[in-house]
Image (cartoon, rainbow, N blue to C red; front, side, top):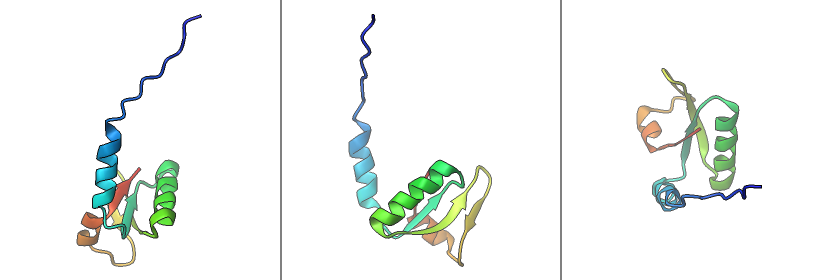
Length: 78
């Protein structure tokens, strides 16, 4: 039997934390699929952030008169 070894490249974690730290924790934009909605739900709950829109490969839909400036501040998740 060949042993299974998992090699995890943990170099992404500091970059992820840096991106999260630079986010103002106010707004979220997500993809309109299950994993995107679950990610947005988790981030909204954890940081009390507001979902302000969804994106597809061709469109950005902003809710409640949010602006492009708000979208630039948002954390985009998928």
